[in-house]
Every structure is written in structure tokens, then in C-alpha cells.
Image (cartoon, rainbow, N blue to C red; front, side, top):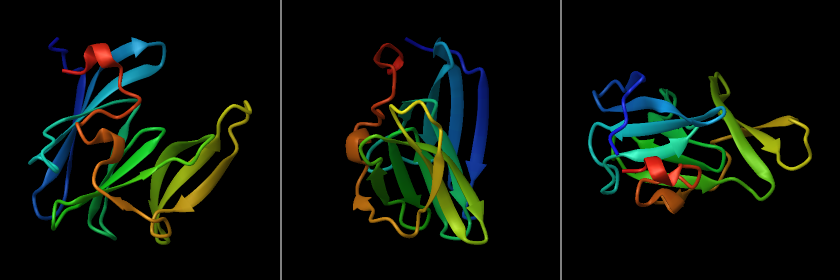
Length: 148
């Protein structure tokens, strides 16, 4: 299925590499189908699919961060290598923010009904090499009928 692009945003690094973020529509109430298209394949992946995903470039560490509620992928702009971090059990990822203190990810407890947030400094976590569960480009949150 070829989906229309309703909104597109190109996030570019100083060396010219980029990630294009494409909003392809809402498949369920408040569940947006998002596709990340890198300027060149990342570990063989030409397109990433997610629900309510987001992307950001951090000049402090020269990396792109692609994420949804359960997975963060960090792409080093110089080497174009990727590492990943899965959300801990019963925790969902929120937004990534960039400040003088570095990149931080909001974490939310799941199942409790509360949206209490704590900040996790991305420089303090242990990254694992590769794309994790998105090794084929599909984040676990992606709605399968719209993955092509």
C-alpha cells in the first residue's frame, strides 16, 4: 500500500547527512504512522516505520536519535553506525530534549494511569550495537498493515 505524505520534515546534520520524517496519517485515534527515511541506509535499512515516533539531531554528540515509546536508535553521523536502547519494563519513552546538560529522555510509568515523568540522560545509559528490534526497519509500535 502506498500511503500519501501529509507532512514531511528534513532533519540535517552539518556534514549533509539527514533523516526525513514523514507523517503518513492516523491509523487509529491519536496513533500516527511515521516513517523515517535516512539519506543513506543504516545497517542496510532504507526506511523505518513506527507509530507516534520522533526524530532529533543532537549537535553535542553529532548523532540522530529515532525513537518511539519503546526503543531509541542512535545513529552516529560520522560513522553512520547505530546503537539502540530498549525501554525498561513497565516504562515508556516520552520526548527527547536537548539542553546544555546533554540529551535527555522523558520516562513514564505504564499501567498506573499516572504520567509521572523522570529524565534519563542519554550519555549515562549503556547502548547496544545495532538496531535492536527494528533491525528490519520496523519498530514494535508500527501498525503492520501500513508497513510496506
